[in-house]
Image 1 (tube, rainbow, N blue to C red):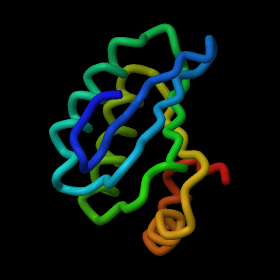
Image 2: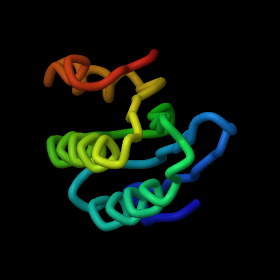
Image 3: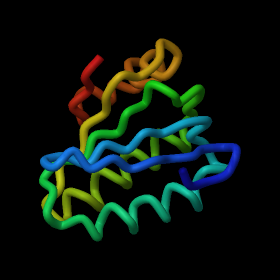
Image 4: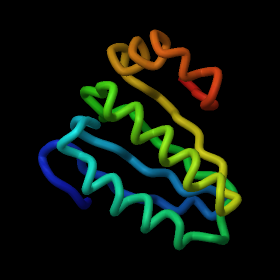
Length: 108
């Protein structure tokens, strides 16, 4: 598990996908940790999909949403599809309010 109290992550390789378990808060304070995560993910060229498991993410704000969009662009550039999964109710509400489902595949 890497990161600060704002956000921590753990990467699980399922063989076909990389599952990134996010925990804590995805906001301005998580920027540095999230950028480190993106650099780490970009090294996994053998995978076609990265799934961000949001079930342990307690909070996301507009900066956090921006980080998700950056992640999508960066991973897309190296041929990796980004999906979001299992968001908590408050995180899902923010995703719904911003119509993120038009950009991201979100599984509940």
